[in-house]
Length: 213
Length: 353
Image (cartoon, rainbow over all chains, first blue to last red; front, side, top):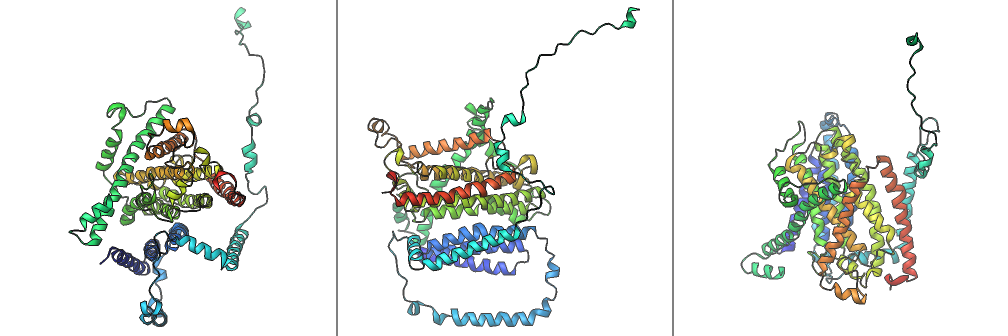
C-alpha cells in the first residue's frame, strides 16, 4: 500500500462514516458537525486528486462560512424531537419507496460500469509546479467568461434582494438611530466648555446677632 | 535532512509508515518551537503591559520572572477539569481541540527562510485562509456545549464577528495575490526582493492595516475581544472551562497571534529579506543576520504591536465592531482591488514588472 492510497482510504472512510452519522444522529447540532467533518474529509479526497483549489474552496466556503451560519441557526432552535418523529411509521412505506427509487437511479448513473480506467481513461499526471488554481482561473476568465459574469450578477442580485427584503427602517422618533459620522466627528469642545471665572473665596462666618445681645 | 531520515526508515519499515513517521518528526520540529514561543509570549505580554501601566509584571518565579510560563503551565495541567451539569461532554472536550488544531495546522505552509518550509504548496495563501476559517468552530462548539447563556452569547458574537472579518481578510489576501502573481508564500517573499521600497507594504499600505485589524478580530484580541467581554458576559465562550481545557484555548489564541504576525511579515514586510538590500553601506554591516533572524525581528515587532494595542485601547462596542468590518474595511478592500488592478495595468513602480 502506498502512502497516497493510505491517505485516500483514511479520508474516504472518514467521509463515509461521518455522512452516515450525519443522517442517523438525532441532535441537529451534532448532525451539522458531522456534516462539517464530511466536508473536510471530502476536501482532502479532492486534494489528493490534484484538485487543490476546489478542495480548499470547499473548506473555505462551506466549512468556514455556510456551515457556521447553519450552526448559528440550528443552535438557537429549541427543537422538540418527539414531534418530528410523529407519523414515522405512517410515512415509512412511501419513504422506503422513494429511497429505493433514488438508490436505483443513482446506481444506473454512478454504477461501476460507468467508471473505471477503461471508461474514463487514466487521469493526467501533472508536473509538480502545475497550479490547479491558475488552470481554473484561465479557463473561467477566458472560455467561460460570460457564464461566469452571469453567475456573479445572479449572486449579487440575491444579496441585494435579501438586504432589500430584510431592511426595515422605522420612522425617526420611534427608535433612536445612531449617526456614526456625527459621533466620530465630535470634538472635545462640543462636550466640554472651559469657563474663566474668579475663584470663590470662602468668607469667615459672621457671628450671629443673637449672640451679641 | 528529512529525506535522509525517510530513506533510512524505509530500509526496515513499510514505505507508508516511513513517510508517516517522517511527517510526524517534521510536525514536531515546527510545532514545538511555536509552543515554546507561545509560552514566553504570555510572559512578554504580562511584562510589556506591566511596564506600560507602571507595574512590575511577573517577577517571582526565576530571574525576572522568566520561569513564570512553566509555573503557569504546571498549574493549568494539575487543575481539575470541571464539567458543567448537563453539558455535552464529548463536544465540551472536542471544542478546545477544534480551536487548537487549525492554529497548528496552518504552520505547514509558512516558510521560515528560503526553502525552510514543511510543505511548499502552490496554493499556500488559500490554504492559510481555509484552515484559519475553521478556527471559529472551537468558539461555537465551546459556547454551545457549555450549556450556559454567557458562553452561548460569546459563541454567537464570535461566529458573526469572525465570518465578517474573514471577508475583509480574504480581500486583503487577493490584493497580495494580484501583486505577487502567485499564492506560494515563498514566491511572494521572493517577489519583494530589492530593499525596503520593493516590499508590498507601500502599494498595499491600506491592505496592511486592514489585514492586521482583521487579524486582531480573528484572534479575538483587544479591542475586538467581545467574545470574552469580561465586563458583559463574564468570560464568554470559555467561562465554563477550567484547567488545561482553558489552557488549550489560550494556546490556540496565542498561536494564532504568532501566525497572523508571520503572515503580515511575509506578505507585506518582505518576510526573511533584509530591509537594507541594495543600500551599499548598511547591507554589508547587517549581512551576518540570518534570514530567520530578520523574519523573527519583524514578527516580534508585530507581536509587540498586538500587546501594545491591548494595553492602550478599550473594547469596541459590538455594533460598532460590525460596522467597522462591513462598512469600512470591506468597501476599502474592494476599492483597493481595483486600485491594484490599475497599478498592474500601468506597470506602476518597482512592484509590477
